Amino acid sequence: MTASREELAAALVDLQELTERLRRDCPWDREQTTRTIVPHTLEEAYEVADAAINGDDAKLRDEIGDLLFQSYFLALLLSERGAGDLADVARGIHAKLVARHPHVFGDAEADTAGRVRENWERLKVEQEARSGVFHDVPESLPALLLARKIQRRAASAGFDYPTVADALGDLAEELDELKAELSGEPIPEMEPDRRVAEELGDVLFSVVNTARKLNVDPELELRAASARFRERVEGAVELAAADGKDWTSLDLVEQDSYFDRAKGTV
Image (tube, rainbow, N blue to C red; front, side, top):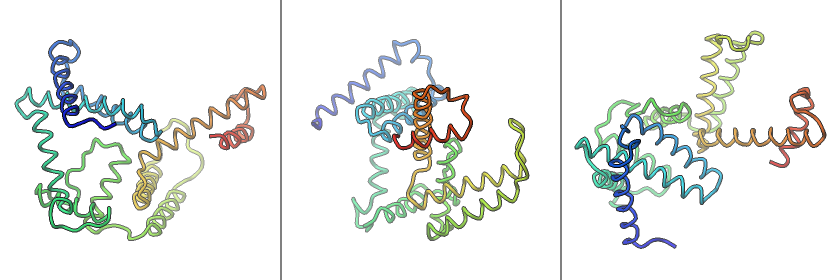
């Protein structure tokens, strides 16, 4: 059941008061700064993503709460410096969202999600006086998301493959260029050949571009693929153990056989 406006307001004020008390009375919270809190904020954001991907609503509700507290705490640190408070933050995002949705609050037209994104990028440049193709791209983003954001900025300036087929063609070309640089097996744990490393970077960038054209979030899907791989290997280990075999003593062919069986269950 959805909370009433009064219940929502009371809950948010209660959290603000709790945040202020923790800052005042807890030795750990008193010591925190923006720099020390931000790593926790990033961690909580990833935990929100994991819960969303796994479809665990109870976990998602809990993790959103953790992330919400991070926002409250960072806003409190702002207020201590006289740089604004939570109300300023709320009013600021409210005004920004209204300005960025003229198709909802004004006379502009945008009947598709793609058109909304185009308008959004254009309005950011116009309303915030941003300049350059790659304006306001934070270098601290995870590499996959950094690549996608850079590609989106380029696309908003018209520099983009028109179709998925074109993006896949570029990916195939980059793979061919990587293969051309390979010469035998590298020695484990040694510095990679720079040309090979650069070509592999180009392949990864092309993979992200293909994902973008397919409307796939590369960060979330790579995390999901990693989770599937882990679950399948663990399942293969269990299947081998049920047959009285030690996974680490099996050769690759036998391990792969158990892995294929595990894929059918995970």
